[in-house]
Image (tube, rainbow, N blue to C red; front, side):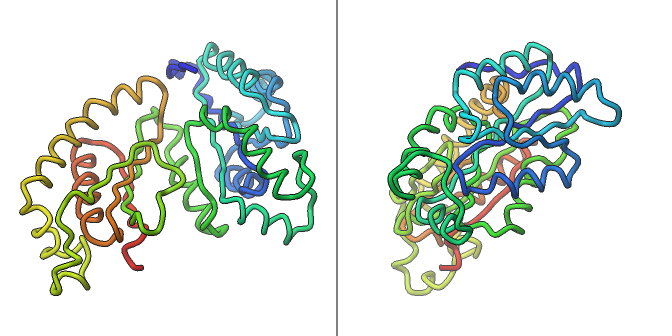
Length: 294
């Protein structure tokens, strides 16, 4: 699907909340309601445009609308695409928010609540697997993907507020930069991933091993390598080229991950440098180091 950002003539913002059952749709809708969104749960995708039109004519501020659509209503990528086209034609800004989590976490959440899974399957595991496959096209349409595997309700609230803070302003690209260690697996949610294991590893220097990429001696060790400077220059040049085009196509949230072996030295130093460049370029940027304390 090729969607462009509409002219925000109406001042209305519509968030479409979807994703896997058990990944946190209910909590997310409550969080959005708390920050001023008019929330409707369990709405068929084909009715989204009608809802927005009705909400816009209602008394009070209904300029921010959130709609939960999921397996219960048979969300379909074609219907979702048509709904987005209708909204964009009317000059309404949209964000498709997809919530995801690891299969074992989803299973544990359903077992704890003892609720039946809404998808078909001979077992809970089958139902989760079938729903994940069915949602692949919808996930690919998402503007923002949030992995709730390791998030408690407070961390989820912080994440959602981070994504949607300042939404009443003119939309601009938000970038999340994170470092990680390949030995603990790659992030589930990432748009652009860089592997910096080609650089010499400070881990093998006894005096640097207990330190991290936040410490000056490690940063100096990393950037005294010619390849590190070349990598940073080429990467920032590429991002400077890409971000305006992503933004023009309506993408408002971009995740960038930088990985090394353990996620404590090289990736941290490079992620810090990338985030600094983006911030100095006027890009709203958040920064996280997933494995720095492990």
